Image (tube, rainbow, N blue to C red):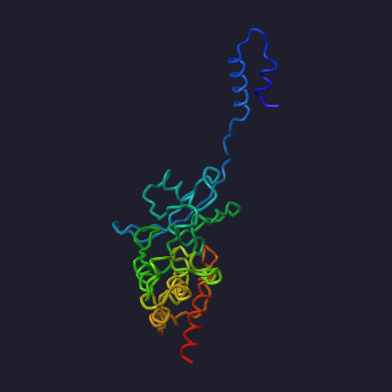
Amino acid sequence: MSTVSRVFRRLPSGEGAGSVLARAFSSSTASSAVEPKASKPKTFSIYRWNPDHTEKPRLENYTINTKECGPMVLDALIKIKSETDPSLTFRRSCREGICGSCAMNINGCNGLACLTKIEVASDSATTITPLPHMFVVKDLVVDMTNFYNQYKSIEPWLKRKTPPQDGKEILQSKKDRAKLDGMYECILCACCSTSCPSYWWNPEKYLGPAALLHANRWISDSRDEYTEERLDAVTDEFKLYRCHTIMNCTRACPKGLNPAKEIAHIKKIGMARAI
C-alpha cells in the first residue's frame, strides 16, 4: 500500500489532508536522502603539449574521486577539464561510441574514451596519450587531415554508369546487403590505422586499414558500377600491399570490425584478376 493511501485511511478528524501529506512526504524524503559518496581516488597521467608555449611535451598527473563521475575515461577527462584544469584539450561529442571523436591511446591501447572503463580496482595511474604517430595539434588532439584525405581518395560514395530507371531507387537483395555488414559500421575514429606499424612507416603512401575497409565496402556493393576502377585505384605496392596482416587494426577497432579481413578480400580479388 502506498504512503499516500495509508495517510488518507488514517486521517484523524479535524486534521487537514494537506498537513498530513506534507508531513508524510517530508519524512519519506528525509529517509531517502543521498549520503555523501565515499572517496575512491584515481590518478590519470595525461599527455600535455601546447604549441604556443616553449615547454616540451610532458605527462601531467591529475587525481580525482571516481565516485563523483561516470564510469568511463571520458567522464574522468570531462571532470578534470571542468573542475581542475580547463586548459586540458581533447575531442568529444556523442559519448556513445558513435562519432569516434574521443579516440586516444589509453594505457597503451587505442580506443574510445567514452567506451573505455576506468580501472577503479587498479592503484596504478591510467596513462592517456594522443593516437600514436600522428601530428599533435594540442594535448590529446591530433591532426586528422591526412587520414581524411586518404578516406576521400577512395571516393566513398555510390558511383553509377547507368542512371536508375524513372528516377527510382537502386534495389539491392538482402543477400547482397548482408555483404556490407562489418564495413559500413566504421566510424572513422582512426584507432585501427594509428595502431598499424605499416601505417606508421608509410603514412603518406599506405592508405591504412580504415580507408581500405571503406574501399572494400564500395567494391563489395552490388549497386556500384565502378568496381574495376576502384580496384585499379587501390591496387598498388604501397596503397594496398603495405599491409602485412599484423592484425593490430582488428584488435584496436572499438566497433569490433575486422579491417584486416576486408583488406585481404581486396587482395584476393586483385590476384584473381591478375591470373
